[in-house]
Amino acid sequence: MQLRGIIFILLLALIAISSAARNKKEKGKKGASDCAEWQWGPCTPNSKDCGVGFREGTCKEETVRLKCKIPCNWKKEFGADCKYKFESWGGCDAATGMKARSGTLKKSLYNAECQETIQVTKPCSPKTKSKPKAKKGKGKE
Image 1 (cartoon, rainbow, N blue to C red):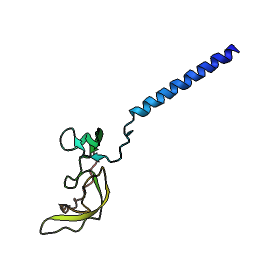
Image 2: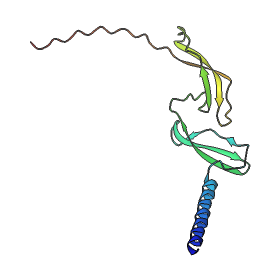
Image 3: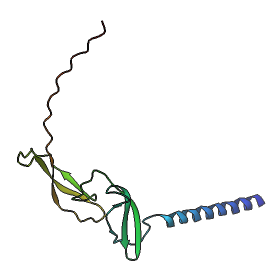
Image 4: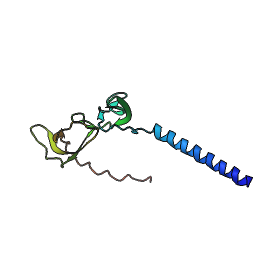
């Protein structure tokens, strides 16, 4: 009978410890807020204009900083938080030496203000001349 009592007490202690550990984990979780109207700022890189940085969000009196990353090939004109679906590149405009394509907004991240459609350009690639075929090397005689 005493063995059952000891086992029962150990079982209760184990349940109490695991419950306390679970509550501690849930308290420390990011986003465990009751706030629903978060306002997010842009991702600001730690150095230069791309790479790892932080984004700040506010809701009522709460402020949260989230780690974020801006790819180094992002288009600064329309921001890293605006995701677009682009058409194929158009032909080369001989007058400007540029080709263009347009994009339609696919997704706006973190309440970013994005344009519905955008136009981007890039220089036309120079025509590549075909290289003359190399003559096969002569072996040692």
